[in-house]
Image (cartoon, rainbow, N blue to C red; front, side, top):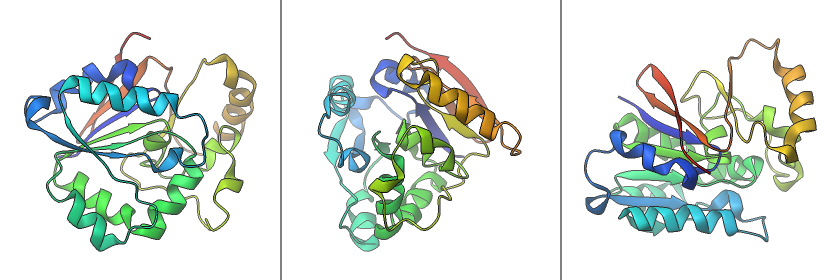
Length: 208
């Protein structure tokens, strides 16, 4: 059964992931994928996510998928219990995901029933398409990307940072553009996350 934890800002709500875990975090190995943040100069939010995971007790290993091969990723992720895909530029993340074969490896990981945690870009990655984030992220960061098709691990679109003043005008445009395209839209504030277990989805709230 697939187990996904999809958030806008992971460190705010990460305590809510515990029911999904197979054991206490101190006994689990977590692969931390920072790739989406590579184009960003300010990585303060990334460090907060990582620090929270360490504080929870996970054994954290950094795995940047950029420049890796599918075989290398499969080998390095083989003994990981949890996969954490951090935020950043979603288009850049998808480009590097496809180029490295991480899309296949991540799907295999999820199919085994291991926990996938996606923060912002990491949450959008598992949707049917990432085209809806065009107003939030710059597609120019991924010049080699030819398709916006996501990993199809959920049937809906996860809209992160809903209600954030920085994205207010952008979201008005995005929602108007996507409301009649046949997708269910899941609007996540910065203090919310979606827990997906098999075909069941529920919303949880943390504290900013």
